[in-house]
Structure formats: C-alpha cells, structure tokens
Image 1 (cartoon, rainbow, N blue to C red):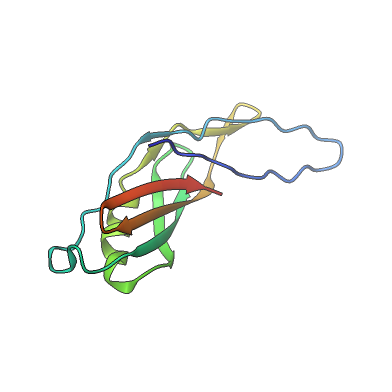
Image 2 (image 1 turned 180 degrees about the vertical axis):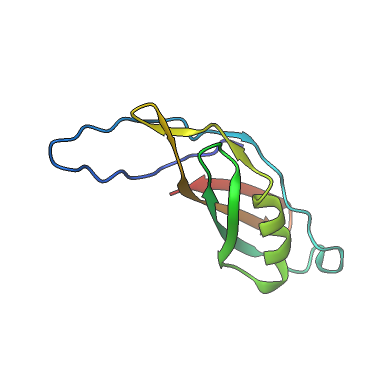
Length: 112
C-alpha cells in the first residue's frame, strides 16, 4: 500500500518556500471491532495534526460509520512521518487518512 501525501503551501509575495519530507514511515492498520467483523463497511476519514517531529499530536474523525471510528482514530494516532520542513525548518502539518473497510478487509490511503 502506498500513501500519497498532498499538501498546499500558500506563497507570500517576495518569499520562496520549499517544502520537503512528510512521508509516511510507520503505519498502523485498524482492527475491526470483533462484534462488527464482516457486518459493517465504509470509509473512515481521520484528520491528523502532525507535529514538527513527524508524530500525530491529535486525530479526529472527519466522517465515517460511528462503529468504525474508534479503531480508525486509535490506528491513525500511531502513524509516523518524516518531519516536514519548509526552507530547512521543521513545521507542523495536517493530513487526512482514509481507512476503507470492506468485506474483504481494508485498504488505506493518505492525502491532503
């Protein structure tokens, strides 16, 4: 599974900013709640605030089935990224992780 990280930097007139890093280096896949195994499907999008060290400082559900939210947030909080830098200085950023739960298991994508 490959993660795609997409983020936007707003340019300030007269300043040049170069962003680097922000690649996923550790993923944790959520575990289906046992009582829901094979009965609940859908996508859970988790918004993650990533600190300058590349660790999740906070994670909240953007949208998704209530029964799958807890497992998704728990997994997202354990993800790690390479630090994102702008002009060589580590910065915080925001990412969204989508956990796709389906009858065959799940897949994960990251974007935004």
